[in-house]
Length: 140
Image (cartoon, rainbow, N blue to C red):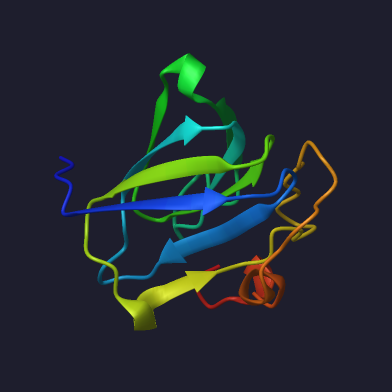
């Protein structure tokens, strides 16, 4: 049961940039649908639900306009991506409104999660560089 309430997009100019891993905490955990409308991305989601049997598992998929593929991300999953081309655009349909104080994340290079980024990381925002490890989180 997904009904979009907000649409967002992001432009990432440099190939190899990583954005993530992001999620929104309860009581406004956010489901979303994402697609890449320009460029190409390696899209990653991780189950961060505390009682889930798939907790900590990684699912990755390449998204590009030519594949005409969208990815549904359930509430309770973290999301991130790496750009595989310059000037990549990602569009999001959000199932709940953004609430700044519920916005959260964990490190893109968390060794326990073990996300394999396909290219060397060229750009990472200061905020994304300072997220804690997932194991250090109460939700884990």
